[in-house]
Every structure is written in structure tokens, then in C-alpha cells.
Length: 215
Image (cartoon, rainbow, N blue to C red; front, side):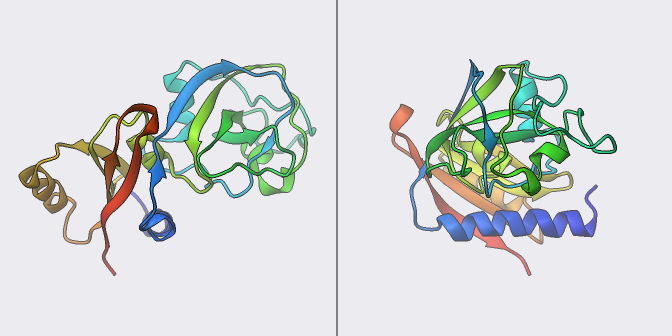
């Protein structure tokens, strides 16, 4: 069960996503297991690892068999820091300024909270472990639930909602009755966005068809 603070943070994150991408076409997404040995940097502006049950960036790495300790060997972490824990799936990029174009590619690898912190922006991460995910169609500020709801463009409709464990998603049949049933199940104080796929395959995009946030 979420605390009131965790609930408020989850709703605020989902509302910010809805506000930012209202009326826009959002690219579909993909995750590909790769090996990358080059220097990487924190992506600036990526949403902190959401507390959404099992659907976190860390869980996405683990789904592909990528785990272990924090990959970053540099900069050297203080002895009392979270290093070398695998705390989060950290968004990283070869771009020193930490930028990723909307819809562009970046990488996801195991990081500790310390290396994933803003204090390490623009600091080079050298790493001996190279197995990681390349994320395509990534957007700065993307939530794990909104990313996975669009991954591979699989669902014609996807509902991203707040439940007792945080933000979660589910696929919905493109049928008015199924949509109504799903929205009614959200509850009396809804916090959700309904995403609709446009197109197929690599060219698929999503739009926010409907959203609601109870006060």
C-alpha cells in the first residue's frame, strides 16, 4: 500500500506526463539487449526510478537477464554511499551534456542511487560490464509504466493508472464496452491516462485519448 506522499508523487508524475504530451504524437518504444563499452553519462531530466510495484526500470533490466552490481567504476563513490548496490535502472547516454532527443535512443544499465544522482551529471561513467538495454523512442521524463505500455506498439489501447501499489498499465481491447469497464474499475478517485496507438510496427505512435485526475 502506498503512503500518501508516494501516492501524491505518482499522481504528480502522471499528470506532468499528460500535460506535457497532450495533443502530441508519442513514439512507440523498444528495448534491445546490447553490449556497449564506451563512456556514458547520466541522462539529464529523466524521471527518477518510479516506485510502481514490479514495473520499474530495474525490473525491465532484470526481465532481460541484466543484473548484478552498479556498473559505474567512475567517479569513485564515497564508502558510505549506496554503491555498489543495483538500486535503479539508470538512463545513460554517450552525450556528455546528458541530452537525448525526444524519440531518440539512450541506454539503461544498473546503477546505485549515488551514481544516478544529479551531482554526477556530466561526469564520465567508465564501466567494465557492458550488457545493457538500448531504449528506442525514449522521451526525457518518460515513466516506466508509460514506456512499457507503449513498448513494441503491441496494444491498440493502453491504460496507465494509479492503483494500490503505484503506477501500473494494462492493455485494453478497442471496444467501447471494454474501455468503459476499464475506466470504471479505476475507482472513485481516478488518476489515469488512456493511450491509443496510431499505425503499426516501427512507425507506430500513441496519443493521449483521455485522462482524468481527481482533486
